Amino acid sequence: MVKEHGWYPYEFQSGTTVAVAGDDYVVVASDTRLTENYAIQSRTHSNVYKMHNNSLLLSTGFLGDVLTLKKTLEGRIKTYEYTHSKPISTPALAQMISIMMYGRRFFPYYTNTVITGLDTDGKGCVYAFDPVGSMTKQLYACEGSAMPLILPILDARILGKNTSNPGHVKRTKEETVTMIKDIYMAACERNVELGDGVVIHTLTKDKGIETDVHPLRKD
Amino acid sequence: MLNEFNPCRPCWDTINDKDDFNINHSYKNYTISPLETKVERNIRTRTVTPVVTGSSVAAFTFNGGVILAADVLGSYGSLAKYRNISRIHQVNDRTVLGLGGDLSDADYIKEAIDTKVEQDIIEEDGSKMTPLALYAWSTRLMYYRRTQLNPLLTNVIVAGMENNEPFLGRVNDKGSAYKEFLIITGIGIHLAQGWIRTILETSSQINKQQAEQLMDRIIKQLYYRDCRAFARYQVCIVTNDNVEFKVKEVQPDWSLASSLRNTE
Image 1: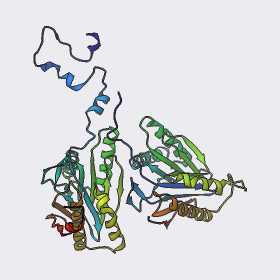
Image 2 (image 1 turned 60 degrees about the horizontal axis):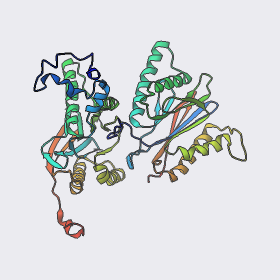
Image 3 (image 1 turned 90 degrees about the horizontal axis):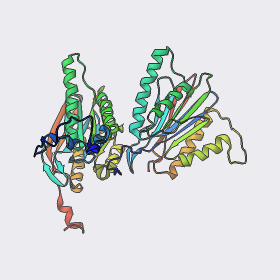
Image 4 (image 1 turned 120 degrees about the vertical axis):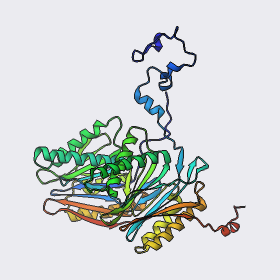
């Protein structure tokens, strides 16, 4: 029996997130625009969520699922900490997210999530997931509405792919932050859902999470 | 007949005990075939289109409080049927709820929240629901109903004073929620949100009187251009001192109409 969709349980909010892992740091960025169809609902809505174990969750897609996933995760992180007397490490958290998201395989969390943090050796790690929890550990990740614009730039600048100078380019965290600012400023010229501001968090073992907000064009 | 036999239903003699009015056949009203599962029945019997609706709700924060406004109309499609429905609901002395969209679902939400508030009173431990708590709880409620594919088709605006700071947030029928200094639901998004945000962003913090005047201007604009709007509206102002309700009537200025060539 074919049923018509009068009401659809998903909707799509905008948001673009970028995460870059370094040798001893992780830099994550998110734009701060929240749209609903073509109306701007908020100019100060970040898609980065700080988790209790000092890792950063980046989540875009359907805001209802993002909020629910974040809330469920927060509960489970606390439970892990109470059970094991230590905060959950980012690789373990990534595995947990993967299993949680596959648990909803037949009514998915429609989110493009990335979990970032410092692994047990102190190196930055970035794990990206698809909406049903397929997990990959990556050097950098980009998700969201302007992903097709930003991802090729990250490929070229970080790994030198498809350029005349191939090879991984190592950067300090300040250089990475500057690179991400420039990338967002370039991408927001060509994407309607990107704008208003970019909030950049840098996670290091010594200084914890440092935050930087950079304004973008508001049109 | 064998294809109609359902071992889970009570059997009675349908040949000799014929009832002319089908009194004993009420099960037929519930399931369209013996093979329909409970979930399929739920999906078939839920409502996904709103019936009696309220139009836009506008809300923004000002220096020292929050102001909300909504007209008092419940529309039955394009019929202005219920002309005195309060869509702004006071939860306690520092939280109010604005509701737009389907009004029967709005009543359900109001009842659910009132039950929670009563429970708080009964517990007598001095704790009172704050706007942020209500906002978080409403998000869960709306998301839960959305996951059951049986949504509450209302937009819930939670407003109030949280730690003596103005709080304003909106939850929609799918469980998406955000907090912002300006929230407008319904068609007001297209008619008012843009220019109001410009005014609020560029001006410094406005005071209560200016906020009231600005809100009157918003409602007037919605009355001019929203087909489902109504002239009588309710304004609610929440400050650290109290929650104030006022009922006002739009004073439209139609002198502009003659200069617009497409109006007769």
